[in-house]
Image 1 (cartoon, helix red, strand yellow):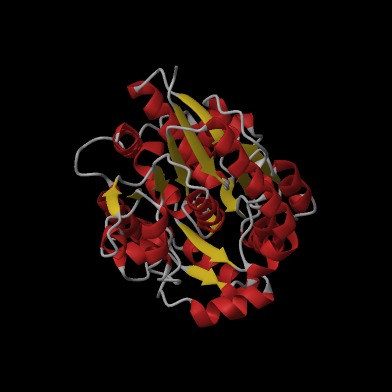
Image 2 (cartoon, rainbow, N blue to C red; image 1 turned 90 degrees about the vertical axis):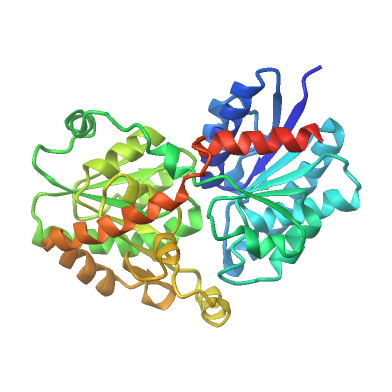
Amino acid sequence: MSQLVYIVTGEPSGDILASRLMRSLRMQRPDLAFAGLGGETMAEQGLDSLFNIAEISVMGFGEVLPKLPLILKRLRQVVADIERRQPDVIVTVDSWGFVSALLGRLQRKKIAAPRVNYVAPQVWAWKKGRARTAAKLLDRLMTLWPYEPPYFEKYGLRCDFVGHPVVENTANLHDDLSAFRRRHGVPPGATLLCVLPGSRSHEVKRLVPIFKRVASRLREQFPDLFVIIPSVAAIAAAVQRAFADMQAPHRVIVGQQERYNAFRASSFAVAASGTVTLELAACGTPHLIAYTFDPITNRIADKLVTAKYANLINILADRLIIPEFTLSRCREDLIYQKTLELMLHPHHAQAQLAQAQQCLAHLKPSSGAMPSEKAAAVVLEAMGK
């Protein structure tokens, strides 16, 4: 009988990460079976998700509270499914709010399967007590960043720096960009602006109005401007509706490969804060990031967040490389002025990008293996024990 890997993620970025892990696990152990919770790219690897993760992919107090009854219902559903299936290992990926609640319930029910988490909770930014909590709930932790293990190891949790998935996600990008432009109706020679308002419905709701106005204003300076908007299948229709009245020609696209083609073809990108900044840097796309919550969460975050930077590259470098406009600074006027400045002076943008790409070199595991391969080895080792 095949051994069962139960894998859980609650957001699109975790879905991509988990799908690569599934593929590497299957390459090393073709006999493994998978069950759990994931999105469209995990479905491509054969996962029949318990439910649509868009239902629980929320952030911020103002977004979580209205959905709390549904989230708790889905949490109970996952716990019951794990109890029924009795997997050989439980792998949780990102989504620490949902994942920690799940792991706590599994611990109270004395589920015996080893528990491995992929992507450390961001204790360096806020809620440092989560490191102690993670040590109580987990058997192993796999981190994406080389500086993260010490935060958790001091509480006795075994940690493995496996490297960041952007290393392999962008390793072989060779598609014809002129063909990409033709596929999506981008006129030859048009100035292509990539706009990324996030992968969660609440991000789209808050960031699209700002990004849309920025793009419309930029068209006054760049009459040939064309806006490309990568999205995920679960919310692509909503993104299309949200941008429908933008005063600039545009196209919403889906698919991981097309996403990277859009990055490579674009002159500049305006993006929601997150992993996308690493992908943009790896694809050679100058960019800035922005993010905001509801007003209540913004005020709380202003008081609680102690990190100097929100951008992952800035955090790794410990200096401001990628411009960031977060919380109260997530404003149309500020984002427009900086975007215009960097688009009018591409040598400044390229200098900024060169520094960002230097940071990416620190995200490769020392073993020479791809991050998903190293992560798969950790999971198999935990399962073997």
